[in-house]
Amino acid sequence: MAMHIVVAAKQVLDPEGVNSYALWGRLTVDETQRSFTVGDVIPRIINAYDEQAMEAALRIRDSGVDCRITALTVGGGAATDVLKRCLAMGAEDAVHVDDTESDRADGFRTAALLAAAVRKMGDVDLVLCGRQGSDYDQGTVPGVLAELLDAALVTVAADVRATEDGVQVVRVTPQGLETVEATLPAVVSVSNEIGVARAPSARGMLDARRKKPAVYDSAELLTGAGGGVEVVRVFVPDVQGHCEMIEGDTPAERASRLLDALAKAGVLGGH
Amino acid sequence: MATDVLVVATEASNDGLARAATEAIGAGARLAGALGGELWVLAPAGVAASEAAELGAGRVYTYAPGAEVLSTVTEAAQLSSSRIIVVNRGAIGLDVAARLAARLSGGCVLGVTDVIVQGDDIEAIAAIYGGAARAQFRFVNAGPRVISLAPGAGEPPARQQGRTTEVVHIEAAGDARVRVMEPAKAAEGPRLEDAAVVVSGGRGLRDGENYGLIRELAGALGGMPGASRAIVDDGWAKPAEQVGLTGKIVTPDVYFAAGISGASQHMAGCSNARAIVAINTDATAPIFRYAHFGIVGDCLELLPELIRVAKERAASG
Ligand SMILES: Cc1cc2nc3c(=O)[nH]c(=O)nc-3n(C[C@H](O)[C@H](O)[C@H](O)COP(=O)(O)OP(=O)(O)OC[C@H]3O[C@@H](n4cnc5c(N)ncnc54)[C@H](O)[C@@H]3O)c2cc1C
Image (cartoon, rainbow over all chains, first blue to last red; front, side):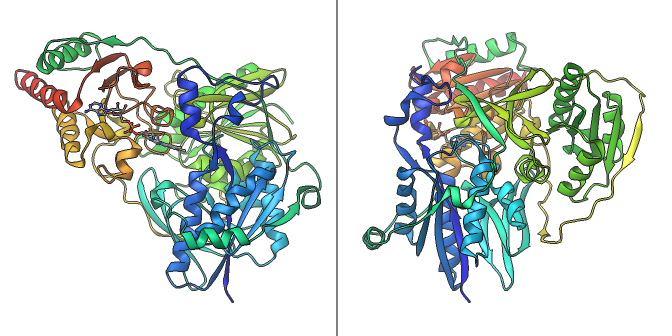
């Protein structure tokens, strides 16, 4: 039977956009104190790590494994753009868990909804997702999801392959690359080390337009709260240090003045 | 449930606890003090565990190095019935913290820069958008509050030489579902994380070959080379050299950023350096907001001069 891979993906504010707004002091907080006012001006994109999880799924297929790929997202109506992207890249199916109420910063609630959706699909062997969202940077979804599905968990993958009866994953650890094997069902979180995700083909984009994601209702999936944390407020920390500019007529002069200044500040010993 | 604090101090070597672990113990001690609870520490048996006692742990839970971490931590959490669990930063954050919280019906916040004590509970402030912003989280369930700290968010406590305390050894069952086939080769030689001088390069180097200048300056200053993710993605530098949110977190005396724009995700890995030096052609580049010393100029002109001067000074002792 074909291996059923679910790729869990979310939509985020483009982090580069958020960065620039923050740096120029234009990242302001709305009256709820819980979100930024830039929601309409900064584009929403697929979380890059999730896109790389989709890439990992496609590479498993490219390696000759008979598999079916379903893209899955939790969110409001606009979140379906993420599904279109995955379909255009080569996913067969897509499932949208409609959850306008959801506080997107609560990975526990998201994971509970994802787990319920995966259970509803019934035959899922492998869930691939990004190592963390580039918005809240929490990275809690893969772990909670594995726990709720009682699945094996492998985090921060740089390479994912299907084996006879499981997956073989190269993980990025602080000590270097490590190879592990996990039984199925498994949840594997994918890191940027896997490399750039492929762009959708023209054909893929045409196909994607014809496919309609299945919609699961969050209220039906989730009885009880399922949450773990809640954002009370967001804010932008001050970053405006004091930078001493090193001047000089030639690069040589500036180089030697810089090393003098560092020695004087006591941060560069022996020079 | 008492408001006791369990610190999970897994980052350790044969020489004892790593900085990530002692910072977590410091933060845990502060919380236990503020909440009137006890401080428990889970650490690998041996030098690290003795050190945990010297750093003030009321009781030390130990485990054999190599034991499965999640079940070990779960057992320590249950035995100690701690309401607050501070997990030291490192891979364990993504691997264990959230699963532990889910298993014990609690909540979890990673990358915590600040903990706010409110009555007998806490709220956690975490870096979001790669450090460009912060979010303050509250915990919605009754179960344990699991947090993991951002670098520098805790101060290691003073060491009381020779202090000992009660030790409870934990023998937890492993997870047969994940098997390590090929362990990571422990990096040989010095680690970027421990370097006193780090010289990093970014896209401003213009060409992969110019990364040689970064290596050379690092060598001349007795430091190590680092890189932005952009040039790691381009293949100019090795993944192990990446500094930032998803790379290494470094805390050198001096950090050189040559041709690096200063995106928050990069700064997340180096903002705790004692001094940051920025070399950038663009005077409005964000990096100058974080830097202590700056040169507006072409790093391809400046790096060779810095190498020359550094070598001269090193030679003249
Ligand atoms: C979720 C997520 C995680 C991330 N994690 C990391 C991470 O861990 N580490 C990381 O580094 N990035 C990370 N990034 C990427 C980060 O946002 C930036 O894109 C990246 O750091 C930019 O690299 P750079 O500064 O080398 O390149 P650029 O942003 O392109 O900057 C190049 C700089 O060089 C300057 N320059 C050009 N020519 C010269 C010259 N001749 N001399 C001097 N200066 C010159 C330019 O003015 C510019 O400021 C992450 C991004 C996301 C979304």
